[in-house]
Image (tube, rainbow, N blue to C red; front, side, top):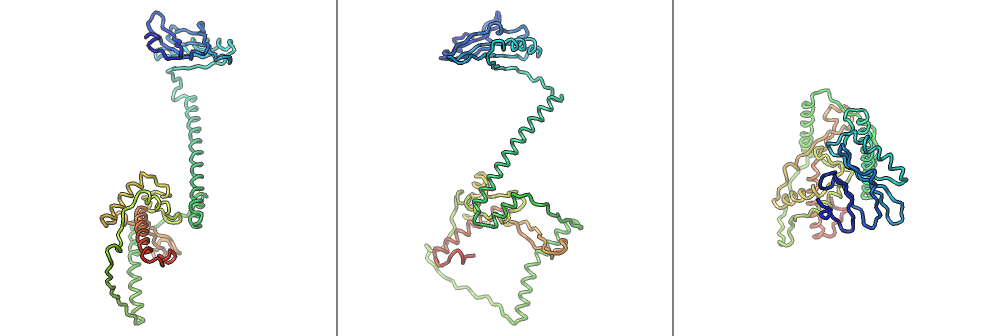
Length: 348
């Protein structure tokens, strides 16, 4: 390959050719307005095929710099570093100029199982781990500051943020003497009977006090079609706004959600969620999976293995909470437009 074929405007090409062979093995492009001198005593291709091109470069009146372009082919032995490059590198400082080595060495002299290699890998790992931990701490700190500013008017949410930021003492984990399946069935039976028992108690109380409970028939009211309420579909921005407004002092959802902070959901989550919510509104169907709740027993007092000493907490999916809040806001807006006397303080 001739120099004309690889020429670059405003740059001069300095190349080191193989002896008695056509073409060049290594080269350097240097701006034409730089003063260059090839150090011929140091520049050559050795018998073991190690390449080194030494050039003195000076820009205007600044101090010149020595640049060494080296190439170690795969077929060149490792001893060429000691026998060829090292003597040249020792001789170059006698020029009293800064040295810059540009290299393509194709060499990995570290053995994977040697102590030196393990020490280097361990050092690189610890350094990278330290950098990652620092970035995570900074991100966590900024996240807490943002959340405090966002919920500064909600003391309950602020305290939840504080409790998340401050390491808490490990709580005692309840253990059960019975088989987990047996305990779950006993608790389920008790929790399912709470509503029925309360209804039966109300009926007995009414009968004992001679109170007759009658259902008052509702009067049918006909309204113009333009005054009727109907749900509308929503945008991803509206869904993001609802998610951001979820209180931090409430449960973030079931354990399957695995989201401690739903306010930070990415658009990758909100876009499909918006589509599902709009399908639910359009087809008047609430997803069955969103109706399922994870019931968690919270100990009130006494023995935690006794079902009556616990109160059930139902954890609903985050998506169901978002959908319900969107529906509530639309219906509340409709009621407010029809009766402005209803204030937010009177709504439940």
